[in-house]
Image (tube, rainbow, N blue to C red; front, side, top):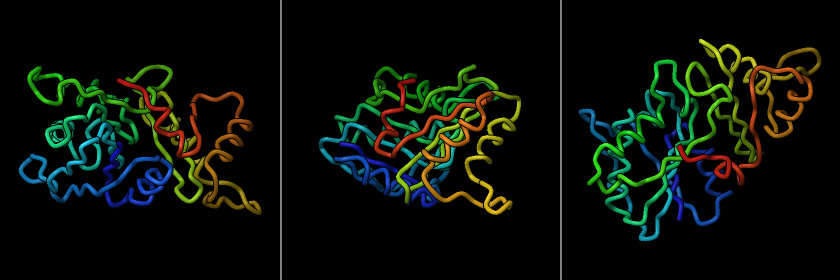
Length: 221
């Protein structure tokens, strides 16, 4: 069984992913419920057969869903204590694998889980989208999703800043209509294929597909 936790701004995406994922449920995690640096959400649900917990929200090397890595670790431990069969945690966010300071979000969460060999969550696997071709340092990524068209796209690029990544991101989000640049509304699969054909030489990468295949693109870190 899979349970998807999301922040309010990712509600449509999480619900679309749940619809595309047989055997899944979903629920809200509200950063406003954080107090004193500790995670204090509603008590984790007990499902009995929960094996995978998904977090989907805004993020970067400093955290996800409004949670710092140490808070993510505490959240995972609470869910593990309530669900003994939990063995995977998937982090769906931008820059989960990348950092300009040395430690990515996934690295920090994994380290936190492994720091105590007696912890109930010590053996949980962390999964996220792939790292950029050149590695995690001085690289950037962004995850786009279009719930209405059941599609996603994941852009990665190197750089001391995110200019190269944003170049591809802008092409994904805008197109020319009647000579004017307007917001693109449609399948991200179609859009990604078009801009890749139009840019055979590129310094960024795009993975894309239907929401049914998003989680299949995750890798263990």
